[in-house]
Amino acid sequence: MDEQLYKIQEGVRRAKAAWLCGRETIAAQVDGLGDIIQVSIASLRSPKSRIEDNGPRGASWGVIYRMTQRGQELPPIAIVPGSRGVPIAEVEVEEDELELFRQRYSGNP
Image (cartoon, rainbow, N blue to C red; front, side, top):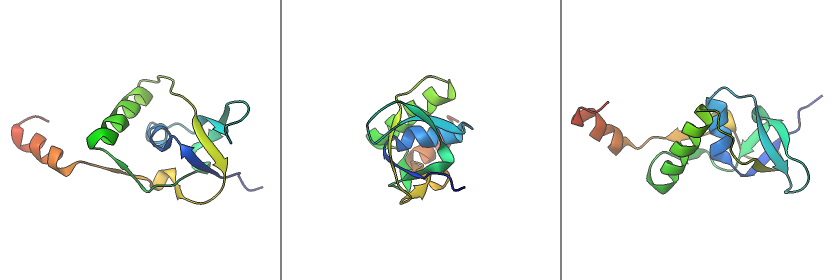
């Protein structure tokens, strides 16, 4: 039997952070209705292929990732049935190359 696939409407960063932290499932609400359920992260598809690690969105990513690492509970993601998009495992976290350069040459690891 095929696993149901879902397109993320809101919560790509939360799903990617959970995936990177080794989680297999994440809390989600389907179609904005009903109960919060646990869905397989492998069944999720993202409308975007990259997550920014710089600027305002990058700050959001950093906070979400650290909270996920600490095991803090985050709001459920919003999903709809669908197979379009990029599997969460393939969503890239785009690093800020200028910030990495500054860190490397400032002596701060």
